[in-house]
Length: 147
Image (cartoon, helix red, strand yellow):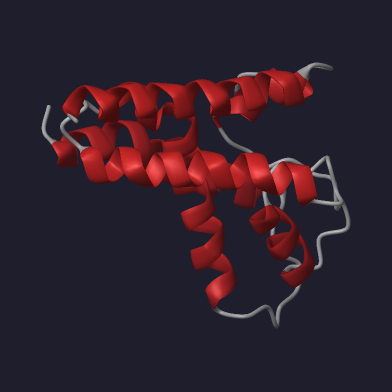
């Protein structure tokens, strides 16, 4: 598969689907929300997909994607260490909830991990950060093979 096909199958199509699902479940209730709110929400879905599956589906030859994933995974891990709201795995979720005046500040993004039921498990955070760490390791290994 070429890069466009990989992006379409594993990132764009699921990202759009999960964006739609999330909008159905948690519609923006603030009619005056900033215009960029929906763009940030959609990008959040794409980034979540990349974080979950990107390291595993993109071949080693896509070095820029793996560099991006390494930075993203490190950012996610650091964010968890410093984020006051431990229920939220991503700062973008808090931003979206605030701009859309969504009451449930601890809500999870409706995405792959939500639909599969992983976010409902008591050990969700352990599984989530294990997946993020595994993605980090896989991307580092893939890049190291090219050096």
